[in-house]
Every structure is written in structure tokens, then in C-alpha cells.
Image 1 (tube, helix red, strand yellow):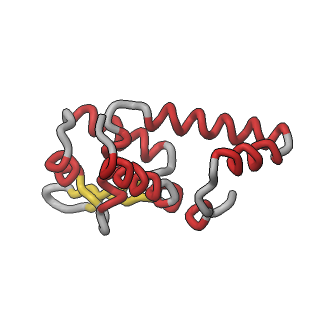
Image 2 (cartoon, rainbow, N blue to C red):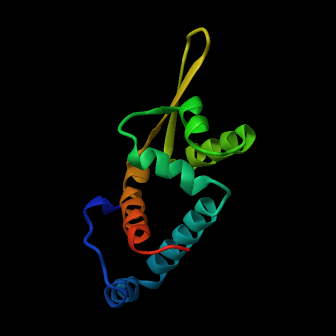
Length: 128
């Protein structure tokens, strides 16, 4: 696996050239990975949850996310589980009373964080 956190921005033409340079098996693997990522990020509030981590400088607790997002607790739990199962978040529980659970982004998630910067930059100039 490559470390994509230091990749330069690619134009559409450069991205097409990169994709076309892959052998068919690798191109299919990449296509499948992108499709799986888009399916995951398309789930309700998944992008919002990851965005919270992109701009936080520390692990977050469920209560931090719940306070910062307008998401039902059951949906938030499901997204945290999905993101953890996908290897984008690590979950650490502490044997305390009351129990404490923290989530932290993995290197795979951190490699996605520039996307959130691009989205915020886009939102400065555009509205929906």
C-alpha cells in the first residue's frame, strides 16, 4: 500500500493517465476500493463524523461527537462501528467508572483528511 498523504493534487487528465497506467488487475482492485469507500462515506453522517476527526487534534469520545453533531445516538454508534470495522478509526475502551471509550483516526483515515480541507475551501467560494 502506498502512503497517499504526500501525493500531489492531480488534474483530471493526470488522474486518468494514472488510472490507465495500472495493469487491469490493479485497476480493478483500485476501482473496487474506491467503490467501497464511496459506499461507506455515503452512509448517513459518515462524512460528518470523519470531518470531526479531521479537524480535531486529539481522540474523541462518543459524547464529544454527539455534542458536535446533530446525529441520533444509534446512528452515531452505527457509523463509529462502520468506520472502525473499515480500519479508519481505532476504538479504545478504558476500565473506568463510568466507562470511557475514545476513538482515534488511523493513518488510513488521516490520508483522507485533505479531502475535508478541499471541501471547506470549496465551501468558502460556493453554496448549495
